[in-house]
Amino acid sequence: MEHNESHETDDNQITPVGVYVALLGLVTLAFGIADILVWAGVRPGIQVGILAIAGDDFFRWAWGGFIMVCAGLFMLSGCTRVTTLQQSAKVVLGGVLVWLIAGTDIFARLCAAIPAGEASPAYFNSLSGFLAAFAPPYTPAVLLLPFTLGVVYLIRMHDTDDS
Amino acid sequence: MVDAITRQTITYGTYKPTLGDVLGDLTVKPLTGIPVAVAALYAFWSVFTSFAGTLVTDGFMVKFFDGFWLPWMQSVWPDPASWHYFLFVGNPAAETCFEAFGMLTSGFFVSIGVVLPAVLVFYLMMTILEDSGYLPRLAVLMDSVLHRIGLHGYAIVPIILGLGCNVPAVTATRILETKKQRFIMMTLLALFIPCGAQLGIMMSVLPDLMGVVMCCLIVGFVIFGFVLHKVIPGENPEILVDVPRYHWPVGEYVVKKLWNRTMGFLKEAVPFVLFGILVVNLLYLGGVVQGLANLFEPVFVTWFGVPKETVGPLIAAFLRKDLAIAQLSTIPMTTYQMVASVVLVTIYFPCVATFVVMLKEGWKELLAAIAVLFAVVFIYGGIIHGIGILLGVA
Image (cartoon, rainbow over all chains, first blue to last red; front, side, top):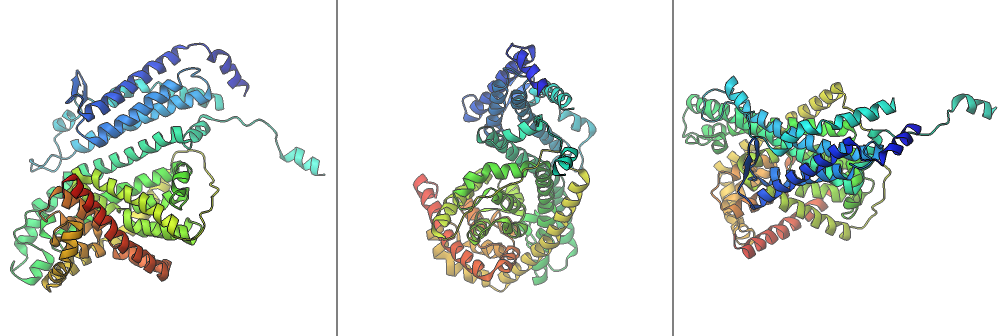
């Protein structure tokens, strides 16, 4: 309890971690909105560098986009006094939602990369074909994945507090 | 004396919540819990389609069964014009196992190539949700919603189980307290919850229409749940749920549960799939299906707006609903007709395995459920047709 209170004293300040979480939340929110807008047909599809939003599938882009929006909002709502337990939990929850979307995107690529494809007589893909399936472009959630790993810092911090 | 024991055995202090505790609270509060539930369902469905659909069925099974198994069966089985060829291998001109409809071609493809991977990955994810502690939280979160249709939060367990197989789901309705709750749950399970086998087949034969079909089923579930709640007398008491802390599932328990559930399903499903195809083929050979199709043609064509050929699959649906959807996929139909007939197959009679388990729960309840079921099929099928006409698609 005392430990938490010690957090409370410096929690009112804008910390670098809080700024990082706020930026991450804003970007996640923007990506989520972009996913939904592209699916809704505002633009036929976006590809900028290694980022791609196809928007061709309700399940992936509208439903998945809604989850990204929620993830962004969770991060934004937790960015002030981010080291307190309640606020950290919101940020962690936002990060977990991004991990879910990114994880399922990567898993979908993995599942599509293992078989050789209908046209090929072989059952398994070649090594080069398998690796090529993981080449860019990537979905917004996959691109955000390394940046959300900062959430692990918050989890570790509270794990240390608990012990 | 009491004070002395208390001093030695009880430690007083302030409870310090952990990050896991706060995350647990956030996942049961509607504002944060509903997005998490939506995300969990997304992940559930995404992993299901990627593994069962893209990787196993489309990636390997279709290639094996259509490229090797079917041509081999067609080449080694004697006399393509005979009745036994029709029963066991099916259509001699078929190029895919879906079209062949023989006991040893479509039967094995459906049970091993489509249903097995779907059920395996479904039960794996179900076990992870259970063992991580998320399922009780989902029950708490859904409690107020499910109370509106006469159930309580733990009804989410048979609902999710039903998406794997309706048989254990019907058994799981025993966790509900009152007769009214159990009856509503059993009826809704039989009507609006497609099993994993059905989902797997739907995903294979009509992936683009899955959203529309599921939407029709969810709307029907809510409307008829609400109606049943209002019509059926009885209580709908509150529950106390013990919500455990979040924890990592233990690998050994996950494997054990997965093994038991999958083996149980296989023992029950594979014989029914094979037997179902055999019986349906016999009915075709005997001219029974054609007779029934002619008899029910006015209802099917006029009231439901689907072709009379769907009578055959509807008979097959009593034996296996997944089988029926596979049959439907070979009948030429418009998009509306396909959606309507798949919804009809789903809400039509429970498959024979579910029927038997429902019978064990009580014959009066079963008869009442069947009466409700016929009424719902007739009304809801007509409503869907009406909406189709209004939208100009029927």
